[in-house]
Length: 419
Image (cartoon, rainbow, N blue to C red; front, top):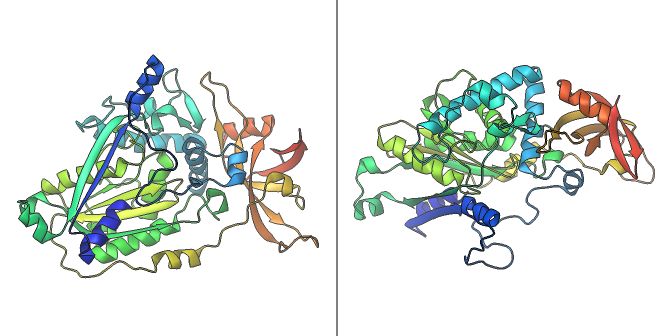
């Protein structure tokens, strides 16, 4: 979002020159901890003062957190199963499609001199579980997960044409911000009617392309946020990019291979976009994603001046909010008026020793009438629940989305069992 705010500050004349800088040294910190070395680095107390500001809840619903659905590794793996089901693929077919997709990203990372990992891996190696490529959260082995422990930095300057000329930049040295938009979907993953779609991303892409006076077919390349395969797949499908489209979907190589420096990956995407445009490439769309397909920021960049005077739509978020109402989410123990539910998405966390934990499922049920409560009869409600051993095994064996499950009290809590 910072790049879009910077563009608006420049457009308004408030700030003719904005510097966006991001740096991470997580790899050094990790090595220091492992070696027992205390780094004498400056720190700041309390919540970081960022621009735009970070949200204290970090995008996780209390019910999600209580069931262990509170990390990116579990969230995006859960979305993958919904993507698989919506596409009508088996788990094996989805694994193969995922491998082909990520092999493309890896190949670009290998050719990028700034990538943190430059080892070429083919689709089979990326998706086959091995001692080096352990399962992290089903269906994601290690090689499709973003890697944050990197030492990487990038910076971009955002300015207007006159200032660019004043500081000595030639026309072919700059990229033009032709259109942009940012907004968020229903805030919590478990409150969304569907977790494999992103209505806010769809509206943002329409708005950014409208400002640029371009269509998706006019774009020559993309950098789709690539923390995990599902993030790429949802963005690709939302933009109506064909699975077999040979245009680049990343200019860096993606977070699992180029490296995913905390909240600073998109700055690297912008730097690589500038390099491509300086080499004569055509329009590029860059996608930034925050939390769990929650916040979306898009920018369209060209190597030619955008003669359009269209400004961003200030009511975009209100329009998106009017499209989708959040689904009520209840703790499993509060689902007193239903004994059955349907699996909407799921994942299974794995330990480093290869053993799996209980599956975590996002479930959908129909709320029944209750005179003591305000809920409307027939209303769809969601919850997040841990699954029993037999159901976990079933979910690992195939596409379990759409399965009917039973909710049973166990050890003071509620678990989902095979229906």
